[in-house]
Image (cartoon, rainbow, N blue to C red; front, side):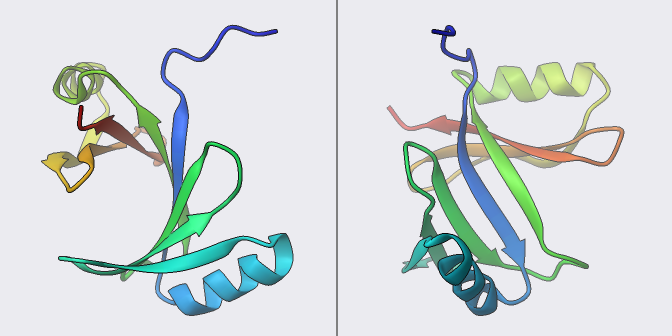
Length: 120
C-alpha cells in the first residue's frame, strides 16, 4: 500500500457560466448529485463526487469551463509564499471563508491550482 500523500487533493471545483447545465450533465453521465448552497457570494452547488473527495460547481464569467483542484496544506501563507518564491503567480491571495482558508496559484504554464487550509 502506498504512503498517503503529504498534500492530498481534497476538492474539485468546476467554474462555469452555466452551473445548472453542468450539474445536469454530470448527474446523467456519472450519477453525481448536486445540492444548492446559499453563500454570501451567491449560489454554490456542492457536488457529491463520491469517496472522500469533495466537489462543487460555481458560476463565474469564464471563457470556458475549467476544473480547479484544491490541495490541502497545513500553512497556507507559507505555501503561498513558497510558490511565489518559485516564480508561481498568485491569482488569489490567501482568503478566509466559512470553512477555512484558500488561495489560487497560477503556474508559469497557465495551469491553476488552489490551496486549502481547513479551520481547526
